[in-house]
Image 1 (cartoon, one colour):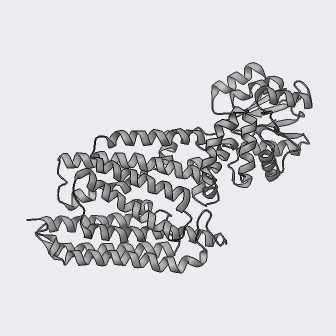
Image 2 (spheres, helix red, strand yellow; image 1 turned 180 degrees about the vertical axis):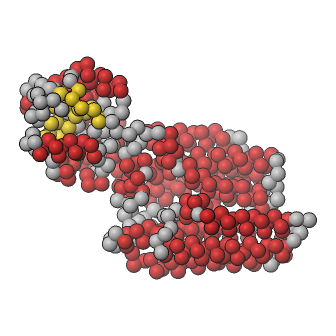
Image 3 (cartoon, helix red, strand yellow; image 1 turned 90 degrees about the vertical axis):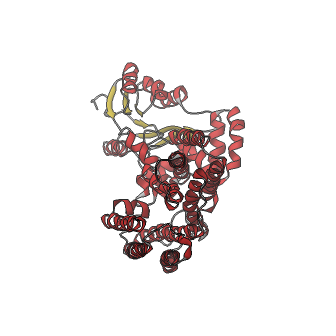
Length: 478
């Protein structure tokens, strides 16, 4: 920063500059989660002006300033300015109540200029307010978008916080750019993380009815299962995006989930709002190629996940039962796509094994809460004191699943599907060992909060899977 601007007051924008998100978008999501019917009022509030709409939303929801993703480089800039004795101002179009919360949390500002009454303090209105306080070219302004161009034009120096070269060039045309801060740009990998592409592994369950019926060879049923896999994957990804958008607050206080793209601000919230319906529409297009029963199954899955995200996520036991049902729904959807009815044994085994894995997720989350010396998981209904109950419930469900598999192997229902039925007994020890190991590692705090991610990255899980596949292959040999 040049000597001529080094003593000027430093005025900092909030949305996209000081924080890597937008307070208006955050507030709308909080409104959707707390009282979704209030969203119907948004067009009517907007008819009275954007400032009025912001004030109405701010009166109904409160953004936790402490959990917001801050831009460290801008915070450092503010600390340097304070150390130099310069005046610092938070200048934002967000409602004054929210801006004051951010300023109070950081304790780095001398004053706050924000939206009050019916005046939206953005663009020319913000420029006029700052020019009235400090005079023409009497301040340095830190901004990030084209909306800041009128403010930069009225400033004595511009600090551009943007990865866009065009924004920097536009700012240089109206002011002197004294510094540029380039936040990391979201890559394709970041968006793939947002849609949880690795979670598509769960959708392999749609192939289970096909494999169980020994019809995995190239056939119309196989093609239907492949289409079902992608339709389910796209729908599930949309649900993950919606869930992440609605769970920003809880994710940001979680030791690992705070790094998720939306929680960390790596991807703008508005991109998620566009991405979710786009994924759903693509999934619906694939559904049109499959039997109607599959579409109904997928619709049921989507409805259940919405119930989970909006209302049932914090309901003790109900949440893990619902997660169990969502796993099983994938098998049911695969059966609907291929017109192969799943057996009682398959559904019973899946219900108990998935219940065990669902409880693994909750137990591992509570263990992190315990290690952080808290008593309750954010956004959940579970207490640390519930851990022994969850340990008993989850491990028992896993062993019951193995018992059901053993009873199936010994039942007359095999119906000659396996010429070497004795080889099926070799499936049981690896699964029994895997369940026991999963729970041992979970209890020790060595389990990722998602057991699917753990299984994919765990060498022993791959070896055990190879043993199970080998035993099944041996059982089918003539």
